[in-house]
Every structure is written in structure tokens, then in C-alpha cells.
Image 1 (cartoon, rainbow, N blue to C red):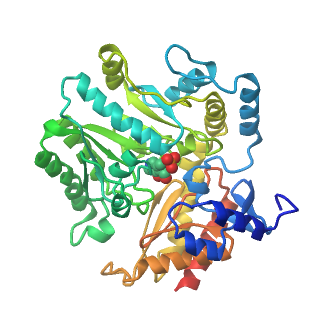
Image 2 (image 1 turned 90 degrees about the horizontal axis):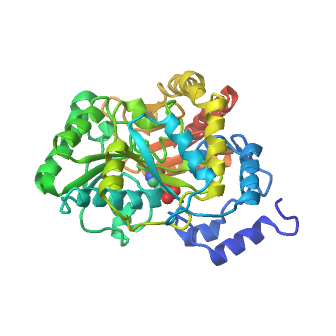
Image 3 (image 1 turned 45 degrees about the horizontal axis):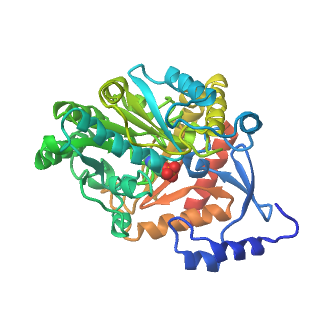
Length: 451
Ligand code: PLP
């Protein structure tokens, strides 16, 4: 136990007394009691009762280096002792953030040059919205301000990022704003009908063209999307999708913005997911894997072209966050990125652990009666559940089924996530073959017990 004088029930009672948790019915949670997590090492977590879990989700797809890294803790401590706080307001900077950017831009393709740091992915998308609109203002096109996202996309929980995202139930809870629009998601399994994946990818991308024409290209600032859709169900677009999206954005002078909050920092085996899909966004939103979740940090990465407009022609950008480029977060990010690079973690995902996970999933689930489709690359994957494989017919109560599978997983000491009709997983990038085998076998156990 964390504190021998307090039981799990004590923590649960205090939690119920003081917290409203994210995306859960709080009354139901209070009755059940949340699991109290107290320790982590590698891919494993322990709760206050001593029960061990394999974390198949890297926390919230963020602990890319796994738990228990002493080097990240030491980097934070050193920076806390030297300079715990200073900022990038007005006329100051500090070594930690400068060195973080030097490192970050050494890994990014050379057409990116500038960053604005934040504390989270939601904030980074807020910064994106204002920066993109400011960019068009400077270029004399202030009416170009509509942001187009995708239905079921997730970009955060603040107001702008909620509006940009496409979660209808979030919009309904006071989360919509003017000048945001959405197109469909490239979810072939459910929406592809008789089309091949290739044909559907083009059709889904051309929804963007139709939306731009409907709104008028002079009014559209940017298209924003996750390279693969994370919280919306780990949906991997068909191979034809991104090239067509890029063509459309270029043709209509609409900025192409990739939300790399989940896909960034090695998840797909490339440093950034857009590199896996082979397109070239104008901006990248980053967070999560930037610090492996050890400390909050996010950011907006800008292309040279955009940065030049903002710097050379823009004058003052009336925008700032007290903790932008926080030295302690920057120090942790540096230690994290160096470990991902120098320990060969990202190349391991590309060449070994990633292909191994994908191969194991296909071996175990291709013939499974509940699994209609297996999607994924690197250390991220989804199992689409179905009632009938040949017709791609889904269960009417698929969310109950995936939720049951997730709950059984928990009982078996496995953390994976249920989204709609899909079970999704994204283990830490330091996963060994043994961890992967445990993840796959426990997932099979949970699914078998669900059936
Ligand atoms: N963008 C994507 C793709 C995400 O998955 C998330 C969080 O899950 C966010 C943005 C929001 O990040 P944060 O929770 O750090 O605000």
C-alpha cells in the first residue's frame, strides 16, 4: 500500500467525496469504487491491493517509455534544483527549452522549424486554432477561419478542441462553437459498403473537397485530423486516403494539420505517424509521448513557411501561457526523447516489437469468431468485433460487448480499451516479446470469456 494507515476503501471514499472523473458516470463509479493505482514498472502497474496489471494502453497512450524510469525522474530533479521555473513571455528564454527544441527539430523533417509549447494536447490544439487564424489574418485573409475536423475525431476537452473534435456527445454538452465543421471518418469496415478500401479511402477524402466547396475555400482555414484516429476507435485510413487529403488541401489553400498527440514519438515505428502514412502536414500537435507522460507537456510545431509569416510579418502575437516551455517539463522531454533515440526504442518498434505484436494478433485473432478486422501498425492496434464476418455485420449491442471484454480484462489483470465496437491497445514502446505475448494471450482470454 501507498500509505499503510489508509485502506483502498479510504482512498475510494475520499475520491468519491471530492472528484468528478473523466468520461464516466460518477454515481456508478462511486458505487463501484475506482481502482487505486500505486506503482508502475515497465509495462506493469500495481493497485493498492497488490494486484498486478499489464498496461496495454500506456496509461492514456502516453507512457511511451513505460513506468519507473529513474533517468526521467533524475532529469526533473536536476532541473527543479537548478531553475524550477522561468518563462518565455516577453524577452526571456532558458537552456532547457532551447535544447529541447534543438533536439526535437533534429528528429523532425526539415520543413518544420518552430514550436509553441503547452501543458497538454488540448491546449496545443487551442494554440493551433488561434495560430492558424492569426496566420491567415496576417496574410490578409481574416475570413479564412473555419476549422474542419472529422466526426469521431478527438482533439481534447477544452472548448476549442472539443469543437474541433467530432464527438457528438461532447458537442451536446456545451462543446460546440461557430466556425467549426466536420467530415466523415475513414472507417471502411463500417461505412465502406461495397467499395474496396482503396475506393472508400478516396471517397472519404473527397468529403473534404465537398465541404470546402460548400463553405467556400476563402472561408476555410485548416483541416485537422489524427493520422490514425485514436480515441475514436483506432481507425487506420485506407492507403489512398492521406495523399488525396493532401492534394485537396494544397489545391484549395487550406492548411493541413496533423494531431500527433497519440501518433507521435514512435508509436507507429516512425517518429511521427504522418511519416508512416507519407504525407506532409503544415503543423503538428504534440503531447503525451513528448515526455512519456511523466510530466505534462504539449506543443504546436509549425512549418518554416508558417513560422516565417508569423515572425517576419506578424508583429506581436497576443498569446501566451505561464508554463509554456516549462523548464522541468522540457528537461524531462529531453531525457525522454534521448532515451527513445539512443536506446533504439523507436527503431525497435519499427523492426521488432511492432511487427511481432501485429503478427501475434493476426495469428491469434484472424480465425476468432468475434473478430472481423485487425488493424494496426507498430505498437498500436484495434480488433473490430463483429457478429458475421463475411457481411461485416456488427452486433446491435457492440458497446456492451466491448465494455464487457474490457471489464473481464481488468479482472484478469489487463488494461485495454473499448471504443464502440473495437478493442484497442497501445502498449509502451519498450514492450518486450514477453510483454506482447502476455498482452495478446490475456486479450484472447478476455475475448473468449466475453463470447
Ligand atoms: N489529441 C489527441 C489525438 C488525443 O488523443 C488527446 C488525448 O487523448 C488530445 C489531443 C488531448 O490531449 P490532452 O488530454 O493532453 O489534453
